[in-house]
Image (cartoon, rainbow, N blue to C red; front, top):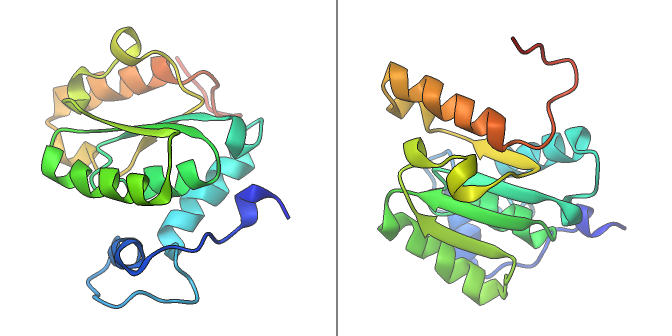
Amino acid sequence: MLNEDILFPLDNQTLNLFASKGKETELPDPFNPNAAPVRRVLQIVRDLAKKPVSQLSVLDLACGEGVYAVETALRGAQVTGVDGRKERMNTGKEVAERLGLKNLQFEQADVRRVSIATHGQFDVVYVLGILYHLDAPDVFTTLENVRTMSRERVPGLVEN
């Protein structure tokens, strides 16, 4: 079994965090500790990446508590989580410390200012749940920055 397919044992506090991502619940599902939406994102990454997750560098923009960043780091990727709200990232930092994830770092920054000049390039850039918070000009600038920070283009994607 590949490291990418393992369900890692998580403590109750982390299970609660993962289980509550995207839904209003207080009880984690002990049989699916990594929450279906998070695992779906990881499956998409595995399907589209041209190398194993453990060899990827990943940027998680507007990472919040870092649920997607933690799950990706558990699979061995080098992950950077960026969010403007330090208090939310502190939860992710605590989880990363409890799980011993040395391959996950968090940084407080405005996602509208993250670019190839400030952060370099990544194999995967997560832009999950942030665009609808931005004004129209900022959406386009942010998406252009994401495009230039992405090492590989999605197969079949037409660019102008």
